[in-house]
Length: 367
Image 1 (spheres, rainbow, N blue to C red):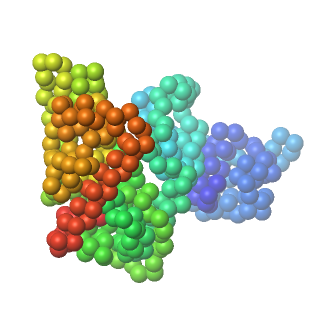
Image 2: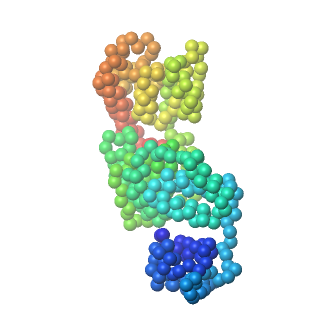
Image 3: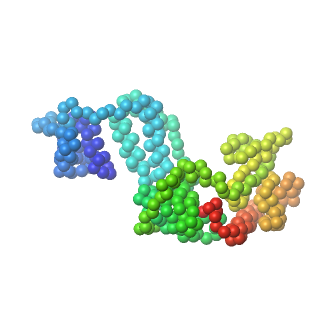
């Protein structure tokens, strides 16, 4: 058990549920010495919760007669919600809050009637949330713990961060405002001194992290929920129109929230519009769809735009339906497909880097 307050509450509950316990039994349960246990008895007495002892073979320590902690009254649904919530905390955070979540749940279950406990046991086996992360939580836990500490104490951090569109990682000094778990990834929201603006950083892209000694003051008007709501409103958006063959229409229909719009065609094919902040993200997503799609727009993603070059078209991202025959040989050669994919992404990243160098930094530039 982690601290004195936790042990004191556990001691009260233990004596309330089972009077006349031996000092050695209580001390062993709390993981403390008998001498420390007597000091806890004195502390409870000062708090108005006196402990008395009865001598003899059947004696022991008990709460003063008639004293009981006020009971926690939960409905069955509330009890299950607390249990599921504690499980989610442990699943999402890993080590930083795993033991705390388990300890809180154990204390609550200790005072619940059998009906609620039976319902929790059922929920634990039947209502399961797992593998919420798209990155290894065991690897992230040390970084998350450092970020949680820096965020709580409002201390600046230094991070070596690998941005998606950057060829090499860059060192950033950041005022950490909040940690956000979204769509399977952990993000850090904070003020980036390199960009002189608020930025959102994906935690698994932080290669090295150190907590500095300099503290910071978070703006009094900063609202993390408002920030997340408005995060992408002022950022540039690139739209891609993808035509899915009839056999792959279910991919679109089963993920409707992904698409900005969906158009049904008479032959069973579907045209879906996908939005993203940059071409590399669109290219990566579209390439993963394989031969199910034909890219209609934009030209840069199709491979026939002036910046990318038509020579890098093909692969699974077809320029149009009539180009399939000329690309058949390429599609049957896995090594060539891999090379073409790499060339496509390299060209798009190069284009983006060139555009960034030509434009001054702004609040809407990517982290």
